[in-house]
Length: 83
Image (cartoon, rainbow, N blue to C red; front, side):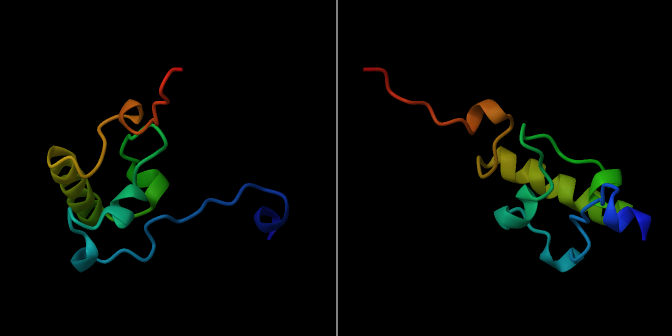
């Protein structure tokens, strides 16, 4: 109870993820497991099982190879044209 009022509560990112839903084409799901810099979040932060984490990592790497997801945050930045 103390945590709910004043303490920081951790958000469970992967609580509703099923093995059947994990696919390299499911970009909205996979992007939940990336931080702002494009790095894959650890199991401690996502709170998923080892089996699910392995499948997520494999799908993210496959999507990166096909250019569906960025490798780094530099590739997501919008570049403005100079005047």
